[in-house]
Amino acid sequence: MKLFYDRASMRHWVAEQHQSGHRIGLAPTMGNLHSGHLRLLDVLRPHADFRVVSIFVNPTQFGPHEDFDRYPRTLERDLEQLSAVGCEAVFVPSVEEMYPYGRDPLTRVVVRDLENRLCGAFRPGHFQGVATVVSKLFHLVQPDIACFGEKDWQQLAVLRAMVRDLDMPVEILGCPTEREPDGLAMSSRNQYLSPEERQRAAILNRTLQQSATAIRGGLRDFRMLESSAMGLLQKSGFDMEYFSIADAETLEPAEEQTLQIRLLAAGRLGQTRLIDNRPVEDAP
Image (tube, rainbow, N blue to C red; front, side, top):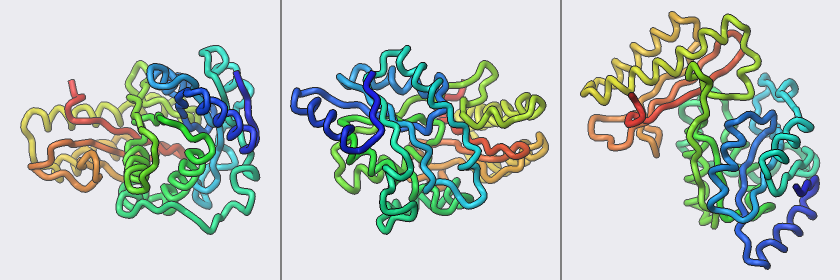
C-alpha cells in the first residue's frame, strides 16, 4: 500500500497511473474508519484499477464551537485496516499541506441553495468547507470516480451539483449507509454517546422507516408527518434540528407530485449530533 503525505508525491504517482491507462478511484474520509468507510472501497473495486483513500480532518468544515479538536484521530489503526482490505494508496496530508496559504482560503466553492438548507442552516459555512476541500482533493488525486456514503445525503447532493456545474470529469457514486444491528447509522461520532444515549439513538432510524412506510401507504400530508415525527423524537430525548420530507435532488420540501422523495433528519442526543436519512422506496 502506497502512503503519501504531500501533494507533489501524490500527483506524481497519479500521473504515472494515468499514463499507464489505469483508472483511479477516490474515497475521501476524515479517518477513524469503520466498516462503512471500508465499504466505499468495495463499491469502487469494479470501477477503478487503483483506489485512493484520503484521510484528512478538514478544519474549514467545522464551525467555531464544533468538535474539530476532539474529532477522533486514529491514523495507525486506520492504516492497518486499509492495508488489510487491500487498499492501493492512502493520502494523509497535514492541514498546512492542504492549506499552505492559511486555513481561510480566498477561494471557496459555493453551491447555492443546497448548502444553506437542512444541515447547512444549522452549520453555516460547513458545506462551503466540504465542497472546497473535495474540489482540492479532486485536483490533487484526479480520480475518474469518487465514492461517498449516503448517510450524509445533503453532502452527496452538494458534491454532485458541484461536479455537474463545474464540469469536473469525476463520476460520483453513493454508497448505501452501513448500520449497526439496531439500525443506527454508523458514524465516527457514535462513540461520543453514553450507554443510555446509545440505546435511544436507534429511534431516529425507526422513525424515518415508519414515516417512509406511511408515505408508501398513501399518506400525502408531508408537513403533518414531519411535525409528528419531530414531536416523537423530541419526546424520545432528541434535541431535533429538522425532520424533512424532501425532493431527493433539490432538497426542497416534497410536494404531492414529487417523484423521488428522501426523508432526512438531524438532532442531538446529549452533546452528540446525529444525522440519518431514508428513501421512501427503501421502507419495509
